[in-house]
Image 1 (cartoon, protein in one colour):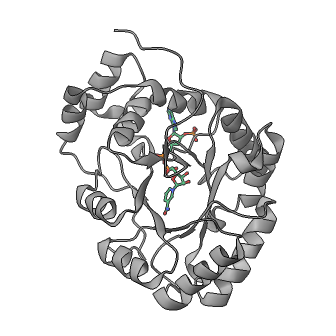
Image 2 (cartoon, protein in one colour; image 1 turned 45 degrees about the vertical axis):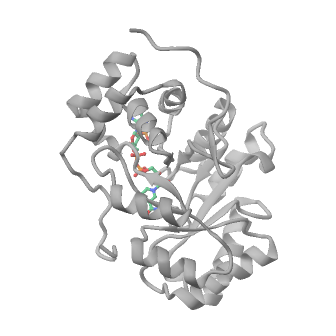
Length: 276
Ligand code: NAP
C-alpha cells in the first residue's frame, strides 16, 4: 500500500501548541542549529524546543530570525536549568534566555527537572511573576512524576500547561499520561524516537512497511494517536522532512494495538538527579 497524500501544511494543535515540534538537544554547532530551525520553519513546523542547558538558545533565535516566518507564529519553548531554580535565578536566567533567543517572550517556559535548586514555592512564584509580566505565556514542567505535578498545580497561580517527559513506544508512560490527562496538563514527549531505538523494533517496522513510511514517522503518528505532542530532534533537512510526513500517517486500530503490545522497555534519559 502506498502512502497517502502530501503532508499537511500545518500540525494539529493541543491548546494552541502545535503537536509536532523540533527538538534541538545536542544540535550544538551554531550555524547548523540555526539552519535546522530555519529549515523546519520553512517546511511548516511552528514549535521549537530548546533549553538553557543546550547552549544553543542564540542559534535557535538566529534560526527563527532567518526563516520567513513571523516570530508570533512560532510556539517557542525553553527550560530553566536545575542550578537556576532559586526564585531570583529563575527571573535572571530567563531574562538571559530571552536575550539570547532575541525575543520579548517565550510561549512556554519549563522547569527542566524537579531537582537541584527546585523548591516549589520559591521556584514557581518566580514563574508566576514572569507570566504576570508577559515575558512567559505558559508554565510547563519537565520530568515531573504525578506527585510533583499535583504539588506544582497546588502552588502555581497560573495554569500548569504541560509536562514534558520521555515517551515513545518503548516507554509508553500510561500512568503518567493518564495522570496528566486527568489534571488537564498537556503531555509533550521527548526522545519520541527513543533516540533511534524505535527504528529496529519489528512491530514498528511492519506498520511502517504497511503504510510505506519510515519507522520514525510511525512512532510520531502513534504518539499523536495518544494525544501527545512530540518534539523529535533532527538536524538535516531529510530527517526534518521525514518526521513531518508523520502528520499524514493515519494509523488504524490494528496498528495502534500492535504497537501498544510491544513489551520491550527502554529509558534513554536517566541522570543521577532524576526523581524516579
Ligand atoms: P529523539 O528525537 O528521539 O531522537 C533524535 C535522534 O534521531 C537523532 O540522532 C536524529 O539524528 C535521529 N533522527 C531524527 N529523525 C530521524 C529520521 N527521520 N530518520 C532517522 N533518524 C532520525 O531524541 P532526543 O533528541 O533525545 O529528544 C528530542 C528532543 O526532546 C530533544 O532534542 C530535546 O529538545 C527534548 N529533550 C528534552 C529532555 C528533557 O529533559 N526535558 C530530555 C531529552 C530530550 P539527526 O540529528 O542526525 O537528524
